[in-house]
Length: 362
Ligand code: F6P
Image (cartoon, rainbow, N blue to C red; front, side):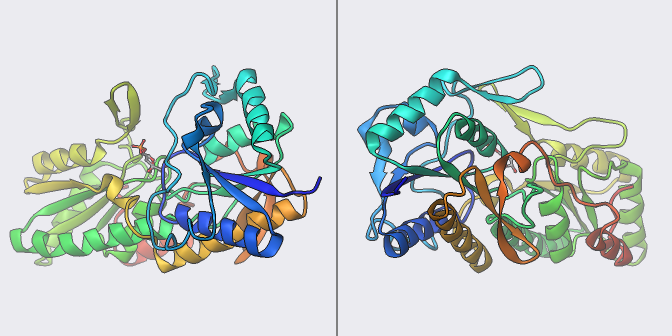
C-alpha cells in the first residue's frame, strides 16, 4: 500500500508535549515522506462523529509555534462513550463492533492510509483492538504518571515533576515561617513516580507512595524527630494513590466520574490530631498537566513523533514507539498494554532517599 495521507489523534487526558508530537509528526510526514496529515479531534470519538469540524488538516503552517504549547490542539477525549467502548466484567475496555466499522469507513472516506494514536494505556488498549480489526495504526505513549512499563519515560512526566518541585520549593518558605506541616498531594494514579521524584528533588521530609503503605504514627515520629533538631516545620508529599497500611485508597466523584483524590486532606487532618501540629494541605491537581512542556519533554515528544512516522513508512503497524536504554525503539502495542509500572521499593532512588533521612511513613 502506498501511503499518501495519514491521520493523528490524541486520546485520554492531556499531557505537556502532545502538541510537540503533532508538530514532529506533521513536519516529518510532509518533509521526509511527502504525505498529507489530518488531525482528528477528541480522540477516536472524532472518527465516529461524522462532523466536518472534527477533521483538521495539519499543514506546516498549522503546526508552527506548537512546540512550547501545552494541552492538545486536537482536544482530549471524554471519559465514556458507549458508542465507542464498554467496560467488561474484569474492568477491561472493549471496543464495540459498530465503532470498528465506523472508524474503518471514516478513514476510508477521508482517504487516510494510516493512523497515529497518541495516548496512555486506555487509548493503546483500544488501538490494539482497532488494529486487530484491520486498521493500520501505530502508537505514541503518553502520560504524566510515567506508569507505562514499555517505556523508561513518557513525555509529560518531566514537566509535571518540574511543577511539583517548584510547588515544594515555594511551600518550604511558608511552612518554615509558620512552623507548619505542609502536605502536598500530587497525581500519578496507582504509581508513586511523581511523588518520589518531586519529593527527592524538592527536599521533602516524608514521601507517601502507593507502593509503600504508611502509618500516621511513623509520619509523626519523623515530624517529632525534626522538631527535636529545631526544625519546626515539615513537608510531606503524598501521591493521590497512596493509602494507609490499614485503609484503602480515597476517591472523589464529579458528576458520576470517579477518580483518585482526597488522601492529602485526610493525612493533614490525621497529623493535626495525632501530632498536635498545624497542618495545611495543597492539592496540585491539574496544574501538573497544564502549561508549557519542559525542554526534556519537548525533545522526547519530538523523537516519538518522528519515530511514529518512520514506523508507518516501514509498514510496522501495531507497534508503538518507546524509550529503552536511552534509545527510541518500537514494541508491539499488544505487549505494552494492561500493565502498570510501579516504583521499585528497593530501587536506587527509594534507597537513596531513605539514606538521606526521608521517611516513607513505614
Ligand atoms: O493519568 C493522568 C492523570 O492526570 C492522573 O494522574 C490522574 O489521576 C488523572 O489523570 C486525572 O484525570 P482527570 O483529568 O479526568 O481528572
